[in-house]
Structures are given as structure tokens and as C-alpha cells.
View (cartoon, rainbow, N blue to C red):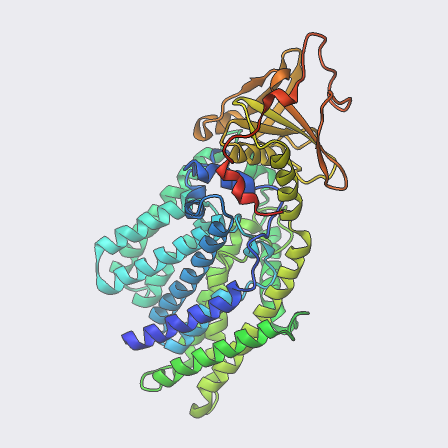
Length: 530
């Protein structure tokens, strides 16, 4: 592959990526993990011990480099997606020897996740997009180590694979497909290739074993709560559903197909594809023989199945949410190889045009689905409700004295879990305060009222890693706030009847906990303007 062809393809992929990234809002939020990730990464914490992911937030950490801005996480996620597209291109180029096929695979990896709503999230997506990038990086390093005969590159590939699995155990099944890439290139009769592939696989198995040891412990409730169900018939049924959710939208026009965004994305792809094809006429673009193409499509399908597999072992997974990150590269390879195979039966002058036409179809439908999903996130994102509530709180409570607890009576249901609000308050007040939600889910944190005050207890498994020990707050250290159904927040000046009765000897004085007139708390800039 010439440097010119690589540069043209990289620029074409970047241009297509830009058309997709421009469609996404940096305020796509669920109601749960965003404030947890923002708070932990702001303190350099990457371990999620309750899930046995000691490096889980490693991939979200760059988002904190732009302090007190959600845009940092949005950019971080976008960069992972672009890098993944480039890596899929390099991998497909090595496997096929066809630059145009590789370009299609890279583009499809960027645009085709038609039913995975989580692909559009601002903060949460980093913890899946990052490991997907790492998996592809490990694959490219593995393939290059074999082609170049470099043991050092093989070791580097193993190290990247180990980090990926220890940050997101769902990468393990796909990572075990890495050895297939070496055997694809070398042939199954090569003893040296089996040793090479086995060395990589051994590293992945070791990382999986470390995770499996943890999952035997009773506190590993996260994975078990999702409903582990390894029955073969059930798993095969879920695999079929996942392939359906990923492939059937190819023949189902999205509701947002006739839009400017679709036209722009398709035009950018056609231009980039044309430039690469024109350069490739001096080489072998679009001229792969049919039999290897069929094998490559089958390899893509197998990699996609491995990407789905961890989710298909869970009975609770009943949609494509979260499942099209790791399966996306395999689906991209499957679609690119299939498109090239179909066009290989056309007369030579029409092959590249046919590949471009099929590629434009996938880009148009993929973009239309992205526009439609972004429209849904615009309606259901928790960003307005959560930041609106927190912005009102910051206006009424600019700062607090150390060791303050904010108790939220949340009639608007903006914060459904204690841990979300606890970390939002901790972040916004530089850890001088914590928060609890009366009636909120007690996942990771529980709290109780007694005669001495409120005791906030993190789960034992997270205490050391998150530097978060059980803490008791006296009634004189509390601020109670109520968010009504109309999302208007008010400080509660008198002890509310909704909470357990105030002990006779206790004194509740929220004004004494509020600090006014000081320097603005820098972290509150993340809330943006009203």
C-alpha cells in the first residue's frame, strides 16, 4: 500500500467521520453514570471494583483534560471512533490486499450502528468506544507483528489486549478472535503461526482468568444482576436477534433519510471513494477474487458474533443497546467483503462504481439512522433535567462548609439513584459535600437516619479505590432541597415531614452550611449558562 493511497483513504475516512460527528449533541445523557464518571476521572480514579474493571475509566480519563466541560468527553469519544475507523481500514487492507474494500470497511465501521442508542452518548460511550479502539489496535499490532516478524510488536499487542480486557471484560470474546487473523494470513498449516497466535491468545486468557476469579466472589453483583444465561439455544437465539438488528436496517429506509445531513454524508463518501478508486486504478482496488472475498465475509461474521457473544450470554439484553460497539468492526468487514464480492461479477469498468454505489447506500442509511437516534436523544436526554436542577442548587448554594450533606427530595425524578447525585454534589463542591436522594435506588451507596444524623455508607468493595469511607453527618450539617414535579428547586428551611422526624435535641440550620460571597467554585462551570 503506497503512502499516497494511505493518505487519501485516511482523509476520506476523516471527512466521513466529520459528517457523522457533527450530528451528535454533547448533551446526550442517561440518568445514571455521567456524574459518576465525571467525578471519578476528575480525581484520576479509573478503577470500578464493583465490576472488576480496574481500568474501566482509563478511556474516559482524557475527557477530564478539558476541565469542567462535557465537550472533553464528547471529543474523546469522537476521536476513539475515528481511530477505530482508521484501524479497521488498516486491518482490512492487510487481510484483503484491496484498498477500496478496506476503505469501505473503515467507512462502515464509522457509520453503521443503526440501532445502538448508546453509541451517541456523551460520557458513557467513552468506556465502550475506548476498549473497542484498543481491541482494534491490538489486532493491527498483532497482524503487523506477524507480517514483519517482530516479537516486540507481538508483546505490545498482548499488552494492549490485556489492558482492554481488564478495562472492559466484554472485549475478551472478540479479542480471542485475534489469533484467527494470523492464521488467515499464514494458513492453518503454519506451525509458527499457531505459536504466534497462541502467544497472543494466552495473554487474553490470562486477563479473562483474572476477571473470572473475581466473578466468583459474592460482591460481583453487577454482572450477575444482568442475568447470566449460557443455555446454547438461548444464546443462539440472541445472536440471531443481534445480527438482525444490525443487518436488517440495510433494507429498511430510516425515517430521516431525506435530510441535508444524509446528502452531505453520501456526497463526501462518494468524493472520497472516487479519489481512492482513481488512485487505485494503478493498483488492485476492487479486483479481489471471489473465493477469498467469501472467506473474508465469513471471517467478518465470525468476529461480529464474538463481539455480540458476551451480551448474548445475558438474559437481560433484549435490544441492540451497547452491542454494536464491539461487533461493529466485524459487521463492517462482512459488509465490505460482501459488497466487493457482489461487484466482482460485474464487468471490470463497473466494479469500482458498483462498490461506490453500495457504499453510498450504507452511508446514507447509516446517517439517516443516526439523525433519527439523535432526535430521540434530544427528546429524552436527562441533561436538561439534571443540569437544570443542579444549576438552581448552585444559585441558591454557591458553596458549602466542609462536611455538608445535601438531601434531595426529588419529585421530578431527575436523579433516580443515590450514587448519581452523591457524585454530582461531590464534584460541584470540590468534595466538600456529598448528596443523597430520598427514595433513590441505593446501588453502590446506602444511607440511614438515626438519632445522631445521617450515615452515608459506600459499598465495601468501592471504598478503598474511590477513597470513600462511611461518613456520619449531624442534622446541623444537612441541607434539604426539594425539586417539584415542575422541576423548580427550593431549599427547605424547616425540617420536612417527608423525612424521618427530627430528634428533639437536633438542630437543622441549612443557612449555616452555605458559604456566600466567596470565589466561584470552578467545577460549577460544567453546568453552563441557564
